Image 1: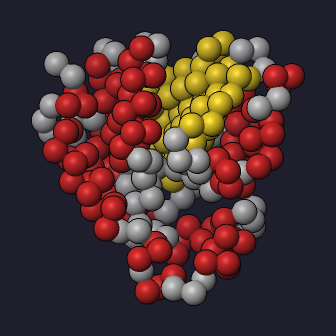
Image 2 (image 1 turned 90 degrees about the horizontal axis):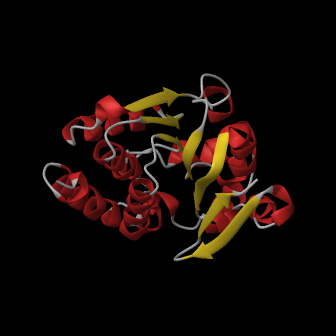
Length: 220
């Protein structure tokens, strides 16, 4: 049995991704006319909290294709430990936890600063029967991911505030096993992070693919 393509996860993901297509910030009157301001906040280490607080009712998920790739990578490399930055509604978390279930178990640590999103994520993970595999940490990821991490980390998903991608990676880097994958969604909004992982001197192989996604592998 493949958890990702059987019930209850398959229909749950279908529904959540369909809802996410309709719930996009650019379609909301709330954000009309603030494109430039939004871009400024997106790239600001001090302004991203304001932006993501305003986006608390939007799921902002990875694409289905990115989610399936995460599942495939986790299954193929028998991943047991995952860290996710940016839980949101838990859609990407479902893809990752489904892989852990099919790998025979594991530990998925995910972090989110918006309490209402954590409540939604918990509900979705419970509905998918995957909550037992997931530890959701509430608060600033620079604090929540600074302690009590697995001895080794097999896979990382970066899908929170883009200016923090480099800082989050720095917290996790010493625990990444050789061959660990790091996937960064909307990576073009974090140019410093891209420069770092694309430099072989820093111990990564890295390649862009799809719509603004960067996949890196730890080699050093």
